[in-house]
Structures are given as structure tokens and as C-alpha cells.
Image (tube, rainbow, N blue to C red):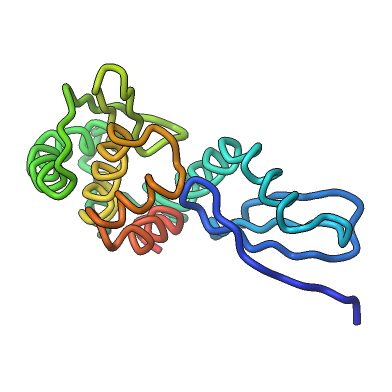
Length: 202
């Protein structure tokens, strides 16, 4: 049997299973279920693997998002999801517009909860139908954008993304301090991230 060794790393809050084995080059991929895996040659140590992962963190985040989108909001069978449950999409209606309406109603409550939890306040909020991110923040202006597709997922996912983006007002990067601040405000961050990777109807 071929010799192998596995361990875990993390980039942008995404857990990555790393496997050292007889391969020629580093290979980072996202499985169909949204989990991430990296194969590295035996000659590549943990520090070098972590550096490679950091360099490709943006690609990883986008790949995980794309996988969740494929698995998720409209489901494998074309089902429509609303707050993590199957729902009927009205004839002639666009899913994105339904989600936007739902988020317009739910976002103020999520903002109030997470601003209280983080002690941070955004200068403004905007809803967008985004393909590669659940949210984004511009710390210099204090403005935050939230993906309308979050209305397809359980409500905890909205709270998590709001807390995540608010935390960027205190720490723009995804370093250890960022994750410490986020987890203090939203202790269920790992659970919410797992839900976002799996899709709302998983």
C-alpha cells in the first residue's frame, strides 16, 4: 500500500484536508460536496504547503462558493429553497427577486443582532446577487454588501455572514485575530460555514 500522511490546514475560514503522497506537484481541489483537499509531494513540508494555500486562498474561496451555488439554492432537482427549506417558486417569478424581498425584510434584524454582538457598525448596507461571495466589506468606507442568495439558506447563515463582514471593519484580513473576533461574536461560525458549503437543501 502506498505511503500517505494527512493533516489539516485552513484558509479564509475554509478547512482543507492535506495529504502528503507520491505526487509530482501540489494539487488543490474542491470536491462536489464542497469540501477542500490538497495533495502535496513528500518533499513539501507543512510550512510550504501553508504558504501555497495562502497564495491560492482567493481561488479556493471562489471555488467553494461556486460549488455551493451549484449544489444549493435551486437544488439538484431544480427545487427552490427559502431559509433552508423547500418552497414553491411562484409562476413567472425570479428566484433572485424573491430572495431579495426576503432579505430586505430580514437584514435589519440580523444587522441589529450582529452589531450588538460585535460592537461594530457599518456605514451602509447593500443587497446584491453575487456569484462568488456571500458578502463583501470595504473597511475604508464602512460599507457592506450581502448576497441575496443567503435567503435560500437557514437564517443562521445570514447572521454569520453579517458578523463576518462586520468583523472586517476591525480586522481587514483573515488572520488569527479576525477569526478570534468573529468567533467571540458568533460562536457557531463553523456550523454556518458548513451549511453554506453544502447548500440549503443538503
